Structure formats: structure tokens, C-alpha cells
Image (cartoon, rainbow, N blue to C red; front, top):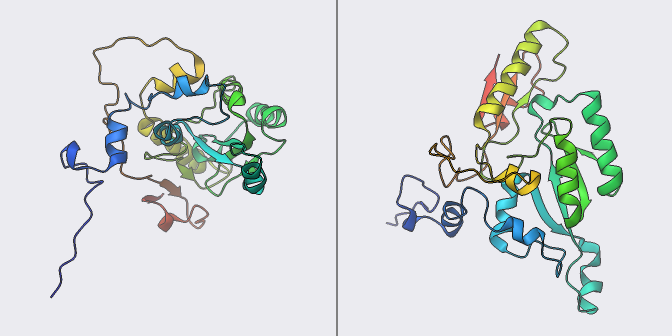
Length: 244
């Protein structure tokens, strides 16, 4: 008779020393700061050089990638990979204004390889972004009250909602609820504002991350609201799926 062993390396009820390396890394990241700011200033490489920072940047809505089509050729030339980044926008319920759409279009043309992709979770992604263009895009989004906080990473991702909030008062109410839930579960750390907007760090006696704590979540977490008879969000694909 054999017994199976349950992997508890991401079980946050345990002491930190018994958790996985990634959980310990998050706990030691100073609430998602790491050394991201320093990595952005590194002119030797087109990447963010620290592997831990690459993981932390997901919480900021950013994935570090490279052009796979150029890997072999660049390897032959003894060059580093052609690094680039993907930026995902936080867009609760998939609602954006015309001004926000025009700003994203402008930023994609200037910094995102003239592409802007729609996702299955009701938001937009910039691709082909170079390291020096990360801040211009994020600051440009901020001009129209958009951000990329928690669009990726071990946290609550974008909150989905049945489309077309203007079709009825009920739809508008549920769309507003999706926005409130998104605002409630967004990480409260000031790391995003410090790194991307240049805000000064301010000392405070208040808990920096009262909802998530130092380790955030073991994995991504998805929330969605469906309005019958439509199930366009696929309620069973959510970790928390609500039927209004």
C-alpha cells in the first residue's frame, strides 16, 4: 500500500521556512518592489536582469519575453536574446471609454509594435514593448485613469462581467459591482506608484498590504459575474463565479 504526499510548498498556513522558494521570494520583495527600479536603469541588457524581479513584474502586469524567431540567429552571433515585454491592462468588466481606447491606440503605435490585442478576459495587451518603453506606456495609461496593477501574478486578476453595461440598469449595476470588487482586491502596496510614476516612498504606520499580506496568493485567482441568460464570462472557469 502506498501513500501519496501532498505538496504544501504553497500552503500559506505554514511557516515561511517551509514554503517554496517563490513564496519566500515574494515575502522578501518588500511588497513587490524587489530591485525592479534598478533593473530598469541597467543599460547593459534589454532585460530586467534579476530572475526574481522578472517574477515580481508580473504583479505589475508585465511579462518579460524574447523574440523566439531570432533566438538561434542571435545565439550564433553571441548576442543576448531579443528581449521584449508584454503589458496587460487592468480593465474591470472590460469597460473602457473612447478616450482610453484612443490613448491605448496611440501608445501601441508609438511603443507596442503597432499592435494592440484583445484578450479572452476582457482587456487589452501591448506586445513587442522594449524596456525603455515600459514607463512611457504605463504613465500614458495613467493619464486616462488606467493601470496594469495585478493584471498578472499571484493575485486576483481582472474581474469579468457580462458585456454591455449600458443595455439595462441591471447590467450597469453588476458592472459597477465588478469595478468595486476589483478595487477591493487590488494590491495596496505603493510599489507600483514608486516604480512607474516616480512617487516618493512615504513612511506609514498602516499595514502596507492588509488584504494579501507579504506573500500575496499561491496562484492567480479569477472572479467573474454572469447575467442570465448570457454566460459569456464562462462562470465555471472562474475561481469565484457569481450569477446575478
